[in-house]
Image (cartoon, rainbow, N blue to C red):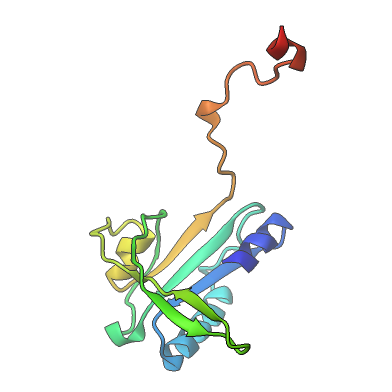
Length: 146
């Protein structure tokens, strides 16, 4: 996701791909699917300032029947911490959260993925809370001290 975000910030059409499994066969399938999708009539290059976040369900759940355009959902994880040792013998903790089924609406990336669909969520990164910015956006420093 970070590389796709950086590309988007630089004006490069970007897609983030994630696979919800651990088997190499599923990763291979997702890569082949992505290549076919990009070269199909159904693909549209993301507009400037937008990236596509694409999630693939684990193949262990069966081959997906649908690819769905959905909104962003709420992701919840059960956090698992694993104590490990790095190559220099130093201990560290690895956070390995497992996604939880939160009963999300199937019109979200989380719900649609849990239902076994490939999901596409177009994202843009302006996270500004515009409603919180006051009408007077500039205050002179002198006004604060007088």
